[in-house]
Image 1 (cartoon, rainbow, N blue to C red):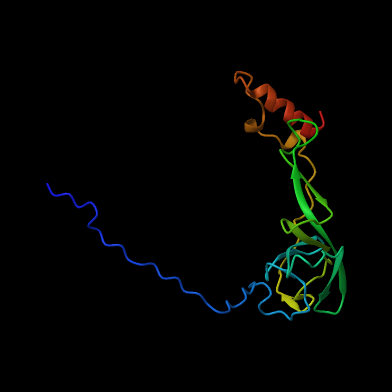
Image 2 (cartoon, rainbow, N blue to C red):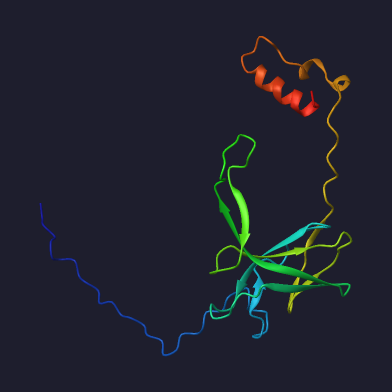
Length: 182
């Protein structure tokens, strides 16, 4: 057996030093003019007519303060005022089985994480939207139809009625009765 300890050649490591590294260009701001300090990180947001447009935002520099509102310009010339907020989540103050696991809230924007523009959309919205000089091409969608009234007793079938021999049917029956207003 031959020992090879100490026989591995060491290659000198050479460092390349650039006189001037080029500035890192944020891809969000690459196509925008220098004077635009805030931009959307998505170019094709989902826009529900009559709903609220949620645009994640990024600022060009941390030295730029977040504005409290930003106007969007629709393709037909209308302006929509949107609020700049920080979207947060927290645990609910009370626990109940019908409550969500987390509560979503908004607050005054601080830092650079979870900052969004919330803008109400018209019911007849279409085409592009301008955020400053940034052109957005929303995916316009119609809202869901309104909820239907609860079913009447006559609409129930045998599969909708509880099986009294099953252990969890009491819970199911209570939920159905509540839904039917019984």
